[in-house]
Image 1 (cartoon, rainbow, N blue to C red):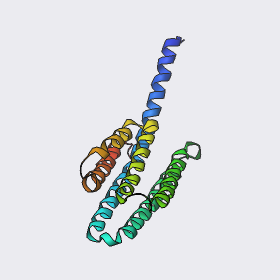
Image 2: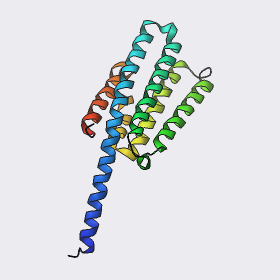
Image 3: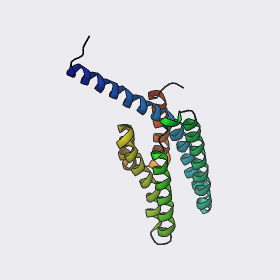
Image 4: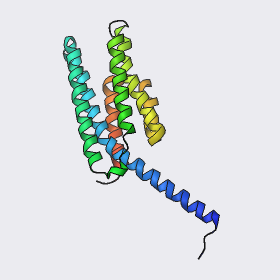
Amino acid sequence: MTIDPTEAATSLQDIATVERRTREAMFYTGSSAIFIMWGVLVACGYGLTELAPHSAGIIWLLISSLGCAATVVIVAVRMHARPSEARDWRIIWAMIAMTAFGAAWSFVLGPVVPRQMMYAFQPSLFLLGLMLVGLWLGRFFVILGLAEPWLRLWMVAVQSGTLILGGVWLGRSGMPQ
């Protein structure tokens, strides 16, 4: 039995589509836990800052440190479960680069720019990261990155809610554990 070139091309396209969707579903599943965790941490951070505004710096340092450590643990566990040839470190290095960039600019600009601009910088940087990830791994991240800053009261309800709901959605769209 022979296959003509058109059938072969169609089969290869189908295989590539299945591979892309599988990779996207696996990434969504892993992102689900991270989104929910960050959503809860961000809600706690804003709530604690509202209760103790004079301690905002230490509160956000602790929230950010806890979130970064938990993210590293989640990513490490998921990476350990994959075969070594399937591990792609580019996203990890991109996250580290964005975090370092954001921290450096926050340190440099913190004493110079108005406080409101500093409050907007880190979430904006995070949303840019979401949109960039979406260019590689799925349009959900692009939509989330574009929609979030336009919503009123996003700091408490929408940012946290979007991350939690996004995590739940990604978990349902991903592959079963």
